[in-house]
Structures are given as structure tokens and as C-alpha cells.
Image 1: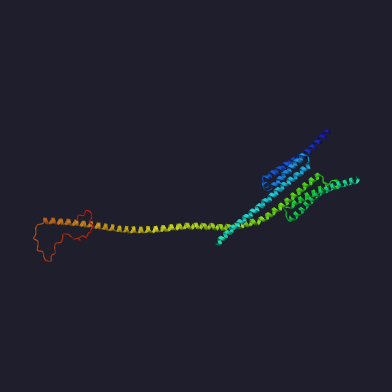
Image 2: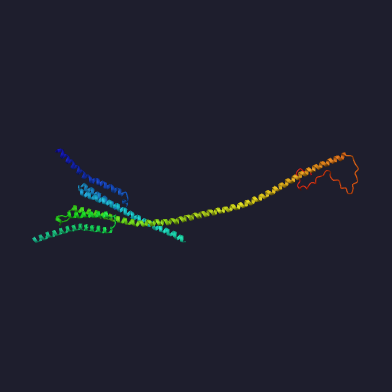
Length: 122
Length: 257
């Protein structure tokens, strides 16, 4: 009976430990994802969203330390979504920038072609 | 006094209820605004596959916020929201906003991609036309360079032709001079040979004369008959050979004549 009770208590503590360890793992995972994104296109085009994600991670850490796991998880969800938004926004801005560059390049090429045509007509 | 107390309690209750209602309205207003925004974005995104999942996610967050709002009311629905519930609802609405930002961003990206495609096609067409002009220009430059090179070569050929003609004339002149010199040499040789022959004849005649003289000295004297008028003067003895041809005015070296 004592052995059974000890084993049960051990399992409960293990479960609790797992629950309490999960936010920390997730926090470090999200943090490394934010750091990786910051080194890429998102760091150039969506710095504001990445900063917001970092703030959300800090809030999640504070909530986890205070024992508010639900709030910590929600903040981490928000941080992940902010990270995704940063990536999507960066892709959009990069394509829009490319579009502007291509438009300017096309204009330049058309001017050059017109110059050649006028030279031919002369 | 009792009236004043009653009035005071009524005022306090009214103020508190108004505050709670305001608080409730603020969150409800935000929920309603999020719902309107999601519907507006959905209308713009009709037919867009890129934004569909983001809008579904936004709707999911909105629904969770609405459920939390209903669950989070205090005082049997007449009070304000519990602080935890309010925080949760704000978090969910923030995520709904982010999901809509992502949906809008994907739509904008798709629009930019569709704008980019014809521009890139047009660029390829224009580049191909420019290449034709540039190739033509390069060919023209090459032909001009070749033409100037060939002009220089043609001038050089003309110069060489003129030199060749001059040399040919020189060669002809030299050949003629050589022929003339050979002719003179031949003439010279013939004349030298004739001279030698004449010398030989002269020597033979001289020898004959000496011999005749010697015979005359040894032979007895004979009366010399009177020369007949028809007799011709004595010819030189043994002169069967014709007289020597007139030699060239040039005397051969060592000639005894």
C-alpha cells in the first residue's frame, strides 16, 4: 500500500513537473525562432512585429514565474502569431519592393529601346 | 434624513452600474468592431485562397473572445468582466487582429505577384528587342572596323603593286642590258676569234714570206724576163687565202700587227 501510494505520488509529481516544464521549453523554442527570424528578412522589414513578439515572450516568462500558466500559454500563442505575421509581412514588403524595382527597370529599358528606335529612324 | 440616505445609495448604485456598463460596452464594442473588420476583410478576400485560413483563424479567435466575454461576466451578467477574463478577451482580440493583418498581407502579396508577372514578361520582350539592336550595332561596328582594316590592306596592296611594277621595269631593263652585254660579249668573242685567226694567217704568211725569201736567196740569179704589159704584178706567194678581213678597230692585247 505504501509502495502504491509512493508510486502514485511520484507520478503526480512527474506530471506536475512536466506541466511546469512545458512553458519553459516552449518559451525557449519561441525565443530561438524570433532570434532566427530577426537575422533574416523579417528583421529588415517587420522589426516592429518581432519586437512585439519579444515583448509577448517576456510577458509569458513573467506570467510563468508568477504561476499563471494559462496567461503564459496565451502570451506564447500571441508571440507565435506575431512571429508568423512578421514573416508574412516581410514577404509582402519584399515583393512590393521587388515590384517597384522591376517597374523602374522596365521603364529604363523602354526608354533605351525608344532611343535605339529613334536612332534607326534617323 | 432617510430620503437623503436613499438618494445617496441610489446615486452610488447608478454610478457603479454605469461604470460597469461602460466597461462592458468597451469590450463589447471591441468585439463588435473585430467582427465587422473580419467580415469586411472576408468580403475583400472573396476568391483568394491565400487569406482563407487566416480569416478562419481570426473567426476562431473572435468566437473564443465572445465565449470568454459571456463566461466572464460578474454578478449574474449585470456586472463588469472579471479581470482575468478581460485580459483573455483582449489577448484573443489581439490575435484576431493579427490573423486579419496576415490575411490582408497575403492578399496584398498575391496582388503584387499578379502585377509582377506581366511586368516581367514585358521586360523579357523589351530586352529581346534591345538585344537585336545591340547585336546590329556590334555587327556594324565590326564591319566598320573590318572596312578600315581592308582599306589599309588595299592601300598596302596598291603600294606593293606599284613597287612590283617598278621592280618589273627594273628587271626588264636589267635583262635587256644583260642581253645586250651578252650580245657584245659574243661579238667580242667572235672578233677575238677572228683576230686570232687573222693572226694565225699573218703568221703563216709571214712564215711563207720568210721561206720564199730564204729560197730566193739560195736559188741562182735568173734573168728576169721583161714584164709583159698584160702580166700582172707578182702576187704574194702562196696567198691562197683571201686577205684578212678588216679587224676591229680595237687591237687585241699583245698583237704583233
